[in-house]
Image (cartoon, rainbow, N blue to C red; front, side, top):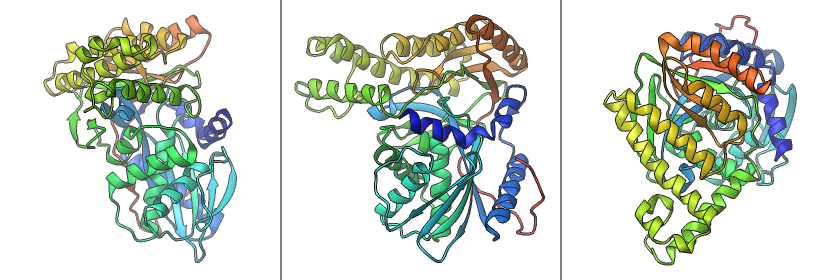
Length: 429
């Protein structure tokens, strides 16, 4: 799905200046700044479609720990971040969707009565897929004009796809006067990505984009969808280091890992009939029945089982203020992803190694699906800028690549922009 990833990349291409600025500035949850972005999107919508509109946003996310566990019914610990996708929308009298992407500078059209899950591998698959999933679930939508702008770095494992899905779904539902059920919205956006786009992702990305809380991470049970919020220490920043190595989740390795887990469950289920997913298998059971699995399947299972345990221990550490235990847990997670799940790459390993020896670092590991993308680093706030400077220099020296490094705080989830209709100053994005 390389073509799809490249086209979706354009959703942030013209917002790249905002991403580059994040290498030097903090990406925080700032309602005032978000409102300025909303006014800018609204002004651009009016200039293009010559009508008023409503504006909605949904964030990307970073996962502190719990990688590839979501589609195994396991546990994850993500946080929404300040990068967002914005959707301005106004209803039409027909059943047509006219969708303009500022980043791609392109308009695409779709008919709500003619949507079907056959992705064309273009950026409009995401909003079209969400419209399809909502209609399939019984939501009668209205035709609409949509204006989309995103600044979530693409191909970086920060869930730009969930941001556009959730923002679009929120906008389409509200425009058709349907109430917002965030849990259901997340599930339907996941269905759009799985069945329309063709990426077999779990629920984590869409869920945290819907339910994120400023200053807090979410401990999510991906089977029950029960969650609890965990306040992050005020003295801790979430520093995301983008290796600038693009990952391609859609077709190959990501879907292969999911298929491997499903095959392992099938084999283990022949002697452990009560299991539904790897979340139900204990480490002792895995070791006891190792002979039923190939070495590759055994290592895939070992990562998922031990990663679930690390998520719960990390959540306990955050709740108890035990920051000293975060480093070993994140380091174990990265080693497991590298060696057992085999989704790291040289640049991710180099970035983690450099970050782990910097002053003020509580812990570091790769984050996201893998094969490139970003690392997540928990860094003492007072050391964050120096961390940023040193890691950037050392990584460039080691790899020849100039990284983007974003100093972040946990952000609010999907929301509507509320402002007087006449309050639309001219703002450039």
